[in-house]
Image (cartoon, rainbow, N blue to C red; front, side):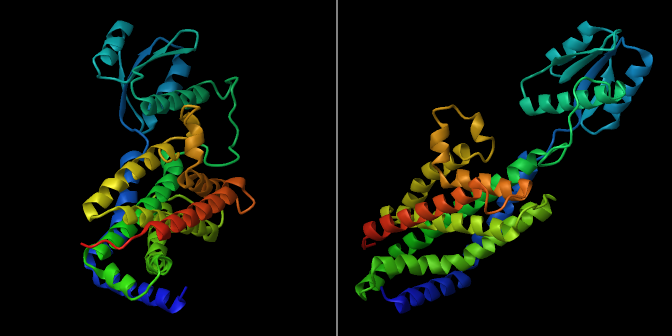
Length: 353
């Protein structure tokens, strides 16, 4: 292997990327927009949920309960004298729940349980209001959490997963499209005709894209932490390293895809079936433990699953390199990247446009 040729390829590719303004938008603006949209669209807690209260409870306890419920942003309260009328509001879709305050001090809740996140929000409000109304005398006491906030937001779980998805997705697509473009315009033909080895071409492209990847990871981590006010309790350097290694592994996957694609359109067709399972199976939108038992081993075989888990361990738990999830993320990404790079260097062929 000739390192001078590797450096020349990397320098040429990096210079061409700097001149392409559209590529700059894809590299910097698209990852930023992607993580912001995910955070805004699915990272929040439901608010202004309509509920109906039927108050037959003890006056003092009911006043405290109702005051707590009305004092927050989550619930919009209306009142009814009849349970039948209140239940009809839920049946017609005008309210999400009915709270019936009973004479013995207990509370009966009737729910529209069609939306789990809405239901969870309502039940949390009921718990907190009952705790206050009973003077803290409920038999259940929830102590301070060991990790995370006492009232965590879904964005706390989501942000590390979205960081993982963005780093993986854009690294794969960028490498695929750029490499296929060079094949299409004949650049690769001229490079191979000059005696350059496939491994030198692969490493040259990875070297060029590494500078871009560093910028992408920086943007993603900055927006995830500052834009959504998510603290990093562990090492920022370790978090950056885990994301960077995933990006390199994704680049190697992009090289494999581009070695099989004859055009940019075909490259996109090959990308989508690979990226969609990553979104669904990597514990990005919901925990891996929620998947069917037979599907969980498939999830844990993906480098993105370990990366998302490692990012959560670093950001939320404050764990370091001694953590098993962090160690596995580094190991799996390294093995996956080397495997993909080996496959790409063996399968790439010069194709005439």
